[in-house]
Image 1 (cartoon, rainbow, N blue to C red):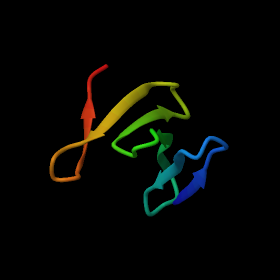
Image 2: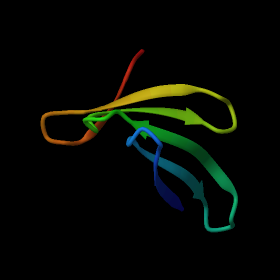
Image 3: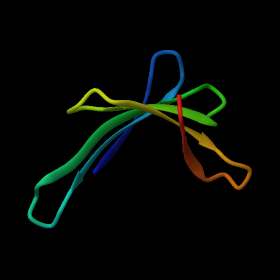
Image 4: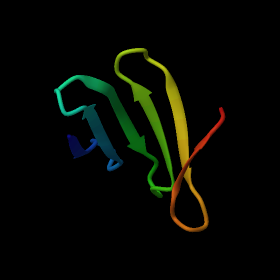
Amino acid sequence: MQVMYLSKDGRKGLATVVQDRSGNVSRREVCESNVSEDIRECTDWDTGAKYRDMKNAKGDWVQTLE
């Protein structure tokens, strides 16, 4: 399940919950894009772990090391 939202400063955000067929949650995260929508900062809800994704030349999201 995903919910997309718009923050007060105009950036897009996406809250994601991933479940298996039994309803067990395997991932919960929130990602917010920068203004140009080519970088997004993501945070795992459960662990607080953070990571960054960037769009490559093809427009695919690729995780980067911080």
